[in-house]
Image (tube, rainbow, N blue to C red):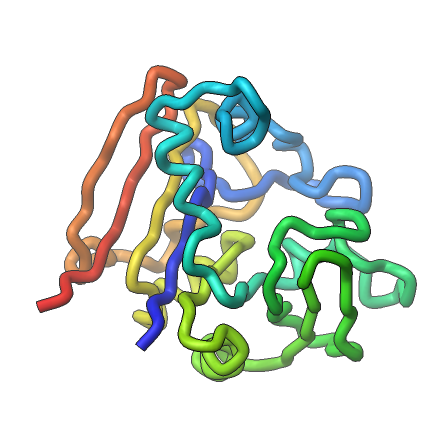
Length: 210
């Protein structure tokens, strides 16, 4: 069976995966792009970028992925459901290039974008969404893309086989936290930590295969 994976999900030292005050022009609220600056210097992001520890982790984001699941907060901003013209925050050619299943209480018809991305909108449980994504993935793996509430829900449901969490050396103080309610999560995984010169600590949670 295909695996369920999380890659490059960035949180602050105090555990926030997004800031407060999200809007159409501030996708991560008051956090801005500070959670993701470490990615922007890698060769994955830009030609001639670094090829060190951060790049080694970020390069694992795409290979083998056949579908993605994300939450309504990642796809849009507060109030997007009232804007019929909103088509996501990534322009006409989003970076997913697979079917993407958006979990929302406000379903709408699928939106086909350039580059192979089609957004599907589901009012479903994590398990139900995973069934739909696995069918669309054609035997490839399914990525849980965020935001923090969706990542937390899939971890809490025991549906994640591998998770890469990048702990960024900033303090946000407010927003949406990842770890709340996940007491004892480590007991079901092999946990490793790798430090990068950027100050980012890469945590991986891998479910044992035997």
